[in-house]
Image 1 (spheres, rainbow, N blue to C red):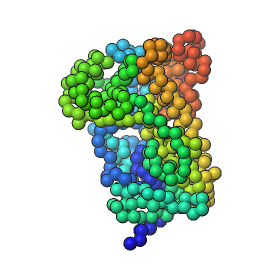
Image 2 (tube, rainbow, N blue to C red; image 1 turned 90 degrees about the vertical axis):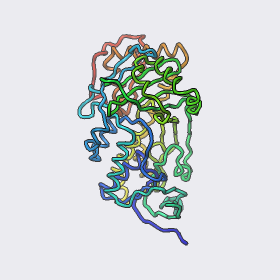
Image 3 (cartoon, rainbow, N blue to C red; image 1 turned 45 degrees about the vertical axis):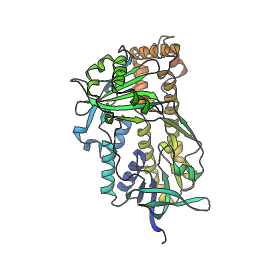
Length: 425
């Protein structure tokens, strides 16, 4: 039996944060697309989700931000950075950002993603294929002209003018394109939990110590997300030590957890999040391109991995109609996307790695400098705003110059410490 053949404008591999957003934006513009997702259905399971302002802007453009279920989202403005033990070092307030995206939005697991997928299925009926696995590219000379896949175990071929690889850090599309990737697995990963929060738990806390990090973020329904740094691959070992050992570790880092940890009664309340970085020498080829983690996975310290995939999708969606109209789908033409996006992505990857070096450290000198920088930021509105706009996804340039770094370390005074420039973002 021969393969079924489908024809479309754009074939997207992966219905994650980037692929689903791209498909929805294309549908809203009347561009045909097919999305292959190897999972059997929408994502389930525990994951913590913070929508930074740039991600909120994407959802707003899709017409979805105000449609997220109110019982599943929570606005958080103040993030307190503390030393292990509870001493506050610095507070960052999203209220300082320009409205309307002057907050972080914490959602219950998969809420935003489900909203995007639901809208996609309504806007493009039959265009989202679950249980569909990419198996290879269709090429004509040097140009990609579609892909091969299996759908519900049956072979299918897709003829398309553009193929988009949105299939994650271990992208099969990237591999098929022959794009080399530097994949780095960080030695740290995260244990995630969602627990009942005490009354008036309205501000996020992020505690750093000697090779330990614990983040606590208010969530809807009077709940709290906990993010706890553990050694990569050690989730089973942590579970083997028992829940009581985990509860004690959290209370030691943050005594305020005493009112929370009693709600941790089963490992099903937890999940595991590995971390990695992907760097590639190029994101485009003739008739194909990569977005999101397939092109540039980054450490969660940047708080921007999923957001950057969404911004990739918006950028590509704005370019695709012109590419299709003029039939300019060569690597040279598609590079306009990479040129637009790579500066911010590269900056965030570097910044995340730098934060790993200082925040995850067990070196007393580095920890001293880290805490000193936090305390400087607490006093210095100018530098604090730059950090905030970077975390919010509103900056493409590094937040600190060399001089700023010296000032942040507390070795020079800053005559402009209280000068905050909103237009810098």
